[in-house]
Amino acid sequence: MSEIFEKNLQEILDAEQYYIKESMSKHTTFRVGGPAEYYVRPSRKQIKSVLKLCKQFEIPWMIIGNGSNLLVGDKGIQGVVIELGKMADTITVKENCVIAEAGALLSVVAKYAASHRLTGMEFASGIPGSIGGAVVMNAGAYGGEIKQILKRVTVLTEEGEEKELSLEELDFGYRYSCISNKNYIVLEAELQLEKGDLQEIEQKMTKLREQRIAKQPLEYPSAGSTFKRPQGYFAGKLIQDAGLRGYQVGGAQISEKHCGFVINKEQATASDIRQLISDVQDKVEKQFCVRLEPEVKFIGEF
Image 1 (cartoon, rainbow, N blue to C red):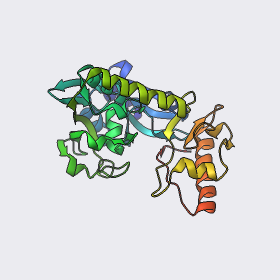
Image 2 (image 1 turned 60 degrees about the vertical axis):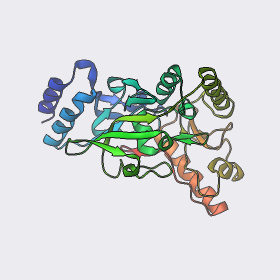
Image 3 (image 1 turned 180 degrees about the vertical axis):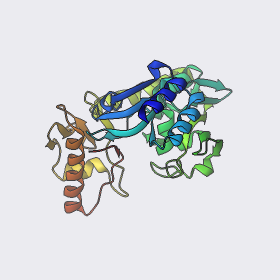
C-alpha cells in the first residue's frame, strides 16, 4: 500500500516537495526529533489533494509551520507531516490590510508591513513562527497578540471546504483559538493595521529586537517561552525562585539567561527536553503549588 500511496503522492507533488523518513530535527527550532514517515511541502492549491489522498489510504496527517513551538519525539512521526511554509507564503497589501498565506513567517510579514508604512505588527517581528501557527495559538509578545490585529482567517475544514472565520468565531483566549479543536487548517490571514511613520515603526522594531537579544538565549536552539504564563505569576520567575536556573537533564538546560526558556545546549534529545520540562513542573508545583503548563506541543513517539 505504501508504494501505491507514494506513487499517488508523486502525481500531486514535485520531487522537491516530498521526503521519506525525513528527520524532524531539520524542521523544528529545538533541532531535535526523529523521522517523519512522509514529509510534504504542498502549495495552497495542493493541500486539498494531499488530504484527500491521506483520507483515501487512511494515513494520519498533521500540519506544521515553522516548527517553532514543537517538541517531536526521538522515534519520529508515523504518517504524513504537512509543512505549510515556503510553498504557501505569499504576502499582499490591500489599503491598510496585510493578507498573508499561512506559511509566511511573522518576521517577514512584519517587515513587509513596515515597508508599506503600516503599524501595529511590530510586537510580532521577533516571534520565530509562521502566520498559520500564530493564528492557531494566538501568539503574542511584549503586550501584543495576534487577535488584536486579526480581521479574518481563511481555513480548510476536514471535509475539504474553504471557510472564512471572523474574530468572534475564532474564540481566542490566552495562547488559544478554536482551530485545533475543530481540526481546521489555516490557509490565509488578513491583518488590520494602521498607517504609520516608517522611521517610528523601524525604531520600535529595532528596540524590541535589542530587548530580545539582551534577555533571551537566542544563541541556542529552543522553542521560545516553554511554559504558558500561569494566572497571577510569571513562569520564569517561579522557575528561578525554585532554584532551577541552569538545571540540566542530558543536553537540555533551563537557560541561565532567561529561566522561562528550555534550550538545547549540548545535543539534547527530545527525551532530555521532555524530562526537563516534567522535572520543572514537579519542582515548581512542590514549592509553590502552581502547575506550569507547557506552551510547547509534544508530537510523535518518544
